[in-house]
Amino acid sequence: MGLTRLAPALRAVDAISDAAGRVAGVLAVLLVALVFALVLARHAFSAGSVAAQEAVLWLHAAIFLLGLAYALRHGAHVRVDVFSQAWRPRTRAWVEFGAGLGLLLPFCLFMVAISWDYVGASWAVRESSRDPGGLPGWYLLKSLLPLSAALLLLQGLAETLRALQRALARGAG
Image (cartoon, rainbow, N blue to C red; front, top):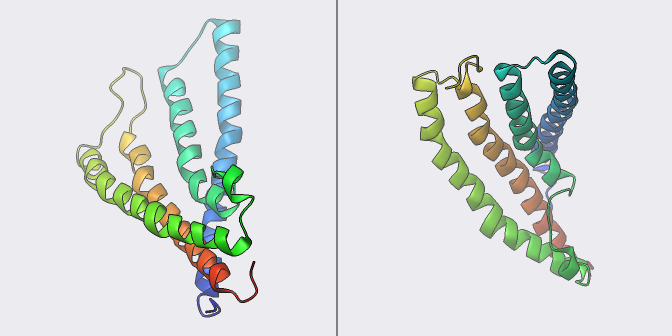
C-alpha cells in the first residue's frame, strides 16, 4: 500500500507543523528576552509588571502548545525506546500504528471536543485577566487548546499512516 496519492497532503501537514514549530521557536526567543527584562527590572529598578509576568505565562503555554505537532513530526516526543530499540523495524512500525490509532488520535479528538465549549465560553465573555494590570484577551490564549490538538491530530494522522506504510512494506524487518 503506497501513500503516493496522499503524499501532497502529508507534505502539507508536515509544512503546517514545521510552521507552528518555527512560531514556537520565535516565541521562545521572546520568552527569554522578556524574562531577562523582568529580572533586570526587578533587581536593577525594583520594578515589576503583572502584565509582563502574565505574558511569560502566555508565551510558555504557546510554545508548548504550538510545539506539540512539531515535536511529533521530528520524533522529539516521549517514547519508550528502551523496549522498541530491540524490535524489528516492522514490529516497531506496527506498534507505532496501533499507538497512533488507539491512543494519540482519540486523545486529540477528545481534546478538541472537550476544549471547544471551554474556549467558546471564554470568547463569549471576552475573558481577560482577573488580576489588576493583567492582560486582556485570555480567550485568545485559550484558543490555542483546540488549535494545538487539531495540529497534533493532523500530524498524528500523517505519522500513523506512515507507520502503516512501513509496517506493510515488503522486506521491512
